[in-house]
Structures are given as C-alpha cells and as structure tokens.
Length: 284
Ligand code: NAP
Image (cartoon, rainbow, N blue to C red; front, side, top):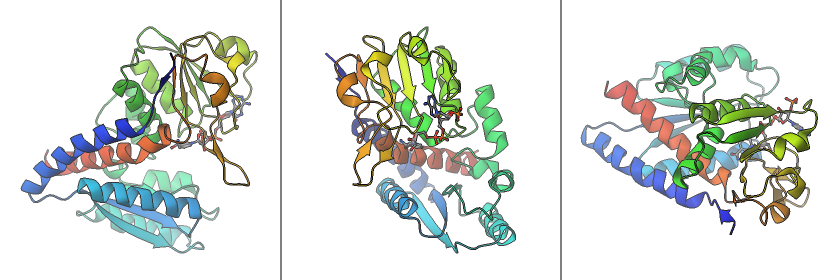
C-alpha cells in the first residue's frame, strides 16, 4: 500500500525537539531572534511571514519584522542589512525573494552575515553545503524534503535518486543532500532528453520544476518514493504540485501530498536553523 508522507508529523517532531533547545537557552537568558526582511507588500510574502512568525512564537523564537519600501534603493537596502548584521540581538536573517529589480540579489547575497544566513544565500554557506560542512546552513525547502525522508525512515543509501529541477533554491541543494546520504544522484532539467527513461529508473524522485502535475504515472517506477516540492496555484486559487497525485498514488511506494507535504515542514526547518545559528553564536 502506498504510504502518504504527510508533513505535519515531521514538523511537529522538529518543533518538539526545538522547544527543549529553546528552554535550555532561556535558562541562560538567551532568546533566539530571527529578522525577517520584506520589501513591499506581496501577498505571498506576507502570508509566509505570518506563518513563520506563528511558528517562531510557538517555539520561543523572537521575530523582528522589517518592512522596507518597494522602491528602496540598493544602498539604502544594504544600510539596513548592515544594521541587522551588526545587531547582536539578532541571530539570523531571512530575506523574502524575489526582490524588486532595482535590487541586485547577487550583491545582497555576499553582504548578508554568513553566520546569520539561515536561508543559505551567502556563497560561504553554499560552499559549506557542497563540502558537507555542517557548520553552514541549508536552503529550507530541500532540507524539509530530507527531514521528511529521515522521519519516515526512507532508505537513501545506494538508491537511484532523480532530482527534477536544478535551481539554487531547491534542485541543486537537494542533489547534494542526497549525495551526502549516499544515493546515486541524477539531476534533470529543461534540456534533459528522454526524461521518461531517466524517471522510470528512479527509486527516489524529487520534483521541483514549477509545472503543475507534470510527473505522471508513466514517469515513475513502481514503488518509487516521490517528494513533490511544486507549488502551483491556478486562477481559482487551487493548489497543485509538480506531480499528478491521483495518478501517482497508486504506483508510488510513498509520496508527499500537496498541500500538506513539503511546504508544511519548511517553517519548522527554518526555525531549526534559527536555533542552530543562535547556539553557534551564543554558546561556542
Ligand atoms: P525554478 O527556479 O523556476 O527552477 C525550475 C527548474 O525546473 C529549472 O531547473 C528548470 O530547468 C526545470 N524545469 C522546468 N521545466 C522543466 C521540464 N519541462 N522538464 C524538466 N525540468 C524542467 O523553480 P524553483 O524555485 O526551484 O521551484 C520549483 C518548484 O518548487 C516551484 O513549483 C515552486 O513554487 C516550488 N517551491 C516550493 C517550496 C516549498 O516550500 N514547498 C519552496 C520553493 C519552491 P532549467 O534550469 O533548464 O531552466
């Protein structure tokens, strides 16, 4: 029978373990603090921010919400970032992206303090991810996928894993994390030929391409574990993943639902990185 890899039990388990960490920090009068930098008022950003703040409150993490004007200049943004980088009460920083086009994300990435960079924007953290150096931070979404695999005891070692998508936010880090777990990893993208052949050989499939219900029954191997990262919202507000859930659920061995799968673990994973950043800065 196909196993449904729901996100909520994973997020709940992460939150419980973080609460004991924050309790220990409280006894030392340390309060982990996350700064959320939002430019403008995009509804997606506001909704994500609300979910993060709620999650943080429940764990004992303070969040500082910084809203900047939509037309902020690059210099003014960098000044704000510098202030937060230098504020010793703030242990971690999340910047909502994409940023308006007058802001150069490449410049901003190298200006965020690496020790506070819980969303893995700074090249130092990207390099640490590549090297498997655990003192860095991992982008939250691929980390959420790995937490789901760990929670449900999905064996990765020796398995053929396919990552669909090669973005810096999801696909590439997911591939590196799978490699660290000794999977044999293939990364497919928009120029990949004979995708059907590659997908049908995958024991583990992570779909992160942003194409609604792209992965069909024919694409997957019988019994495969399928993690659906996609979030696609149509004009009526209906959400679908990158996997055709109805078709895949009878053939897969296990799969993450959309909604209620990977997306519901992301804020818990972010909180985990905030607590890690705080401990590294305050206890070592
Ligand atoms: P992205 O930056 O647009 O990257 C999409 C990737 O998919 C690219 O590497 C692209 O290939 C590849 N691709 C596109 N069409 C393809 C096709 N027909 N066949 C094979 N590969 C194809 O997207 P992203 O930021 O990685 O996000 C991917 C999905 O995850 C989106 O649905 C997004 O909403 C979702 N997401 C979810 C969460 C969460 O918390 N669950 C967080 C972030 C993102 P090329 O490189 O060749 O262009």
